[in-house]
Length: 528
Image (tube, rainbow, N blue to C red; front, side, top):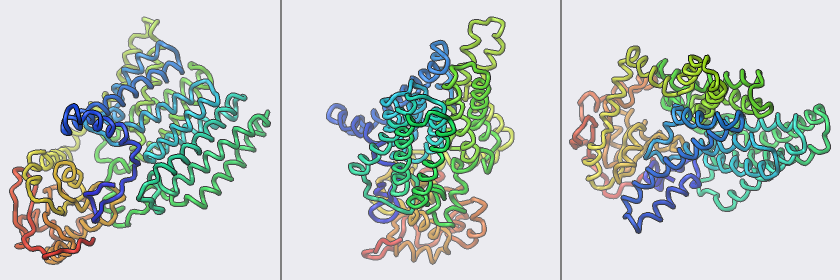
């Protein structure tokens, strides 16, 4: 829960507390030694750094498994340059994405290990933990299961044992978490994390893999295995269709249609790679390494330059993930780190050939994700100056100094657009109506109604909801989809300098517009 967001009592988040365990433990251990503030600062610096180290080590180990020791140090260097993956490990960023990247690389590492019951069990636990944290890694997990299925179809008894271990551990770990990590917020309408729909689907998948593992030893031929896999797949699909239909509609289906249109459609990471991105530079920076690395993995697998089945399995993971990245750009957060590995393999293969120096240097440049980031910056500067200017305005409005003044005001409820919510929660003690979290349906809708209503109606809403403050940036709520709602609205009035008499300006020291509500009911009933 985020207790200072949305309705009274807070809004539920879509990731589980599992991702919070280590930084919380760090703070608990360090507080007696350093004090609360220093312990928190240490944790938010140390935790991303520790995860980044694990990510680099796993990238090196995966490269070694698919090529040999020569590829390992090259993979570590390229993984450290693999944008956008590395952007999730910035000090201070302690959300769940970095942990999911590490878990997904650990899952791929297990896929490339020698098959056994223990390997499968470890993979099952990792997959269950990743799904319990959040479903952002689901496309890569599907890709890994597709590769695991190919290995089972074409493998021996070792693959049967791995499939059995994977299925039992996936279902078993999910069952344990259902008992001990059952969240207080358990919404059946969402399929975006640890919910009834997603856990039902996970249990069905675990059962299906367990059946394949048990049946494999009695299926000596490929046609028999294909037929069995088809039957089990149909049974799992029927089970999922009965218990998890909301998952088929996507993670944001429970959003109100209005929020889908005016907010979620403008969230970059929820769009496709080639659809609706702000600039061509965004497409290049986020997609180039992922797509080129996936293509190179296929070429290397076809040529047989890697170790046979491992190369094919790894190529399957990258190709399916690349298709998912084209549909939703956020997949590149994990994929880019994996996609740097084929470049490391290609570089390692040419290291003892001096005549290939030019090719090796080219591979270094193409395999470094920051190359595309640097080019994209130049493209955006040349082609999209208005967009860059808007970004500069947004950064100026969220400069930390302004929040010092806001934090000194008596605690209250702040009505602010979605883009400001997380800053107000993080840097002030106030409660906020709206922020960029999709489960906060009621609070986000209340904020849009408040700002898009005429000022007189907004005043009545402020009194009814118990709003104490209003915050706004000059660039907020100017999306094209909102233009038809802005005329005569509160947001239009405030951004035009027409402040209604029920609001008292409070200078915040920057470009942010901040107001105190002059009139309040004696004991407001906070309703959205």
